Length: 77
Image (cartoon, rainbow, N blue to C red; front, side):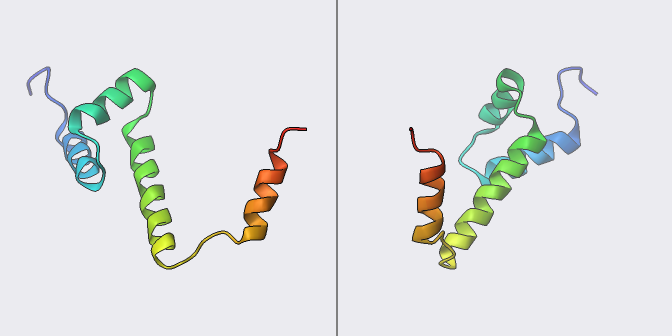
């Protein structure tokens, strides 16, 4: 194996993540190396976004009361 080559399993995961997101392979690798966002972290992040979009597509939003509760919890005194 070339010393600069990425192991095949990681290479496949990077490609799959790039296909599921708007990130390029280079950006995925940069996020991992420069910002400590491991490939596993990035995969979970994209999965969470996909889940949220699916919930929104089904009309599953927070109620006005739930939004108000969060805003009130973090409102400046």
